[in-house]
Image: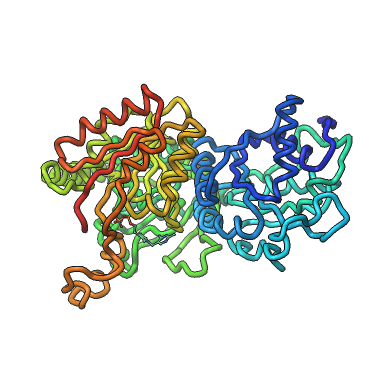
Length: 570
Ligand SMILES: Cc1ncc(C[n+]2csc(CCOP(=O)(O)OP(=O)(O)O)c2C)c(N)n1
């Protein structure tokens, strides 16, 4: 333990150096007049060689947040983001909600309009400095973030930064918000000293209660048809192994419902796909593992007598206003620590013959599931417009084993499985669209040696601000392959309307309003305009070779690529 002194002259310089010291490698930024002291401090650091985070310019705030999100999940490090005062914060709210619901720690910061009208260094000197000030700038996202504060003086700098980072990274993780008034950033702070390493660390993750583990073990061991449903257990790669061992040892099927991370390798014998519904009639015990929505109760629910156990760092998802899934037992703990303990405890009660008999049924069930997927693929192979299942298969065949897939919801994981922990990131359940492209850039920044492929819809790609996205890819030399599965519509809106009104006016209409995206731009040309490789693909048989060309562009030519794959509607 020691104290270090920084050769900083003001708060902005000390702030950046302290971030770097605390392990923040990147600051994703969309700048404004509030940034002047930081721009100055970054420039000075280049000359002096003081370590500071690398500034990464993003020309829209949603892009900055999405890049930070993708970087954070792929690297498991904490990024910082900075946006311009109230207006930049407003543009960043959607990205912050995505990160919050996905438990991604981000130090989200924003400038504040100068407080003073004259007098102090940094005082108002542009007309916007009046209108952009708000009574409660942080009010826009106070409900979303875990903590928010304003840096009020340099003396408090270390405490504030350490508190922000330790709260963000204590599990369940999430974004925190810090506003940085311009006069405070400009304040002199000579001889700034701080503890190294930090004396304000994150809390260790919670461990499950022994009694609750025992009770969960009894329930699972007594069940004839237990089931695990998970979405995010794989956030920690160590949990993937723990889940793989647990499921295999007791022959328990695992369903990944709307996964945000790879939780179980695709070739694992207990991998039973992505939909719990077919298992719910027979299930007599379900372990809901890091999963906010394990099934959709209005469509299909487990039998009333089925016991339901929830396990996770916040198993009740206490930040969700309503979540009423049955819960006979809830265990607070990380899957990586709780699952080995649970496995041990189930061992005391499990009956070997029952486990082995279940193993046979499970193998049979998996074989039928895989056969069904194969059939879908075969049927989809010749369809024109292209079927998204076929597009997913072609991506699976083209990608290297260690590729990272970022899926903004159009890619079908059953046709594009991975076996490697940390190789799949799905969009947050908040589903604020416009995330996938930026998140893929962030993942590429975290893992430059790996191929990163983003699966996007035409709708989600448009939300992602394509011009800003391709600009960022080119500017930061992040060659990602974007595959836009383009059905020229907001298919989800169509499905929702037909689901609620199957015989309704919209179902009978040839062209119901607010669904079709007519006259879409040639997305491939937008990518090409930024120096990338772009191609439109309409023929299903041409897709594999188009993917080869696009892969060549990203892996050999080291430039981004976009395939505009013309797909069928829903
Ligand atoms: C920020 C935001 N605005 C609106 C929505 C509502 N929404 C959900 S899915 C969707 C359509 C997405 O279209 P696309 O990406 O083309 O996929 P498709 O549904 O056609 O498969 C929309 C508009 C949302 N999730 N997020």
